[in-house]
Image 1 (cartoon, one colour):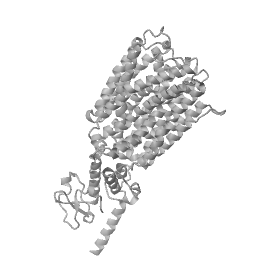
Image 2 (tube, helix red, strand yellow):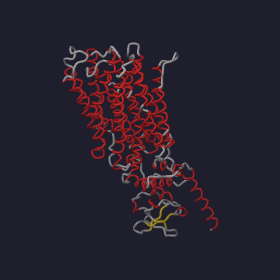
Image 3 (tube, helix red, strand yellow):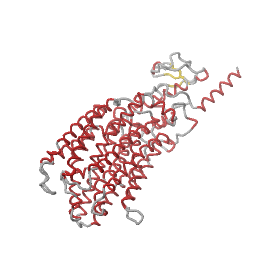
Image 4 (tube, rainbow, N blue to C red):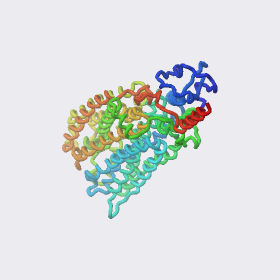
Length: 602
């Protein structure tokens, strides 16, 4: 049996005499009772030329730990940057497709609505169809990626996403189904694909990243969500400005289709690039249980950045070592332990409440900006030109919120996530959001003071400027806070065989929060009239509610483990020295056969 040279910290010398202090110098202080003499086939000299002898099982565990150490201590390279970029393109596409509907739904309502606007249920359907699909996709793709591999699933969801996005842009009305119904169906399908991207991108980034840069790499992947939102706002501004040249209903219809359809472009780019990423060595080693194959992938990718087609053919049953496998009984046994269950519940709750606030603001920013008369009411526009002018103003407002609040939060999260730690940033974010939302709630009347008599097209007052400032501040501390950390921590906490499954569970819980808040806001807060007097009290209560919910996030953060500067295996709460309990079954049978022949010879 031979392994790659980079794992050979000990040199094989056949015929050497076994040592009595097996593995002590490598830190294996609790090895199991040595196997029969016939199994002691591997004898090595370590770096100090001290003779060491290990059983095949000991050697496999040692090689596994050495391989994982290589990944965890690797120098940041172009390969890591490529993983970050490819995973980030997917998140860019996800965010663009999700948040483009914020402006598109208003244009769709003006073109197809009976009174130049969607009904509450139509608007709700367009906005939560993607969220419901995302929840479903996070659960399904999370399980499938742990069963069939990260690489195998990684291209499938992007193909579905691009197809569903293109189908939306080409949708039309028909006698049997209106255009709103068709869009809801296709946005659900798109959401399923977007959901798959959450656990896959997070786990691929975490499993390839070195320990010292893992937080930054994962935060950089997630920050593409902000870039996607920025691209959606910029595209909305361009298409509305262009449509104003003719200012017709047809030009507005073309505008929203272009706005949605542009989301296909980054997705199409990502499809081809995702096939250049190999399967995660951790998946090959711990789920496919092929230690030698994982060693080869580690060697080629971390040192050269290339691999050949043979490197992905790791499903060889004859190479499967004996190790914990992902079964329902094993899953139940692992998560029935308090030390594993409580952190899972903590990250689920944290993600639920931050998405409750994040999507409550992000998907309704145009409505909230109209409620404080930052922009005119589109539904009250007397002509397409006036409606497009209002949409242009809303797009400018979204650019301010994203540029002044969203992106700086992502940037600071990348810079400090590995210095301050995940919990510190999450504590800071929840505490700051509590204060900000309370100010926006209790101070709402002061922000909106004097707008009742100023008219629909009032100039920007100091109160509106202050309100937008706190809105930006809320975006900032969401991203330099729990919106980023709730994505990162579940991708680090759990064993490889359950990592995408558990991340998918946590992400789906967060998406449930996004669905709940959207239903509540649409049906209870924002009605068909955005008159200031009608929404003042509900908006004020909404921000106060958000504030108290953020305060509860401090409790869930307390029960969340700190993952900074810890290996994924250490965080998983499983002993690693004896993770592999035996060599491949075929090898054991062969050794047993040799032992029988030897006994008969003697």
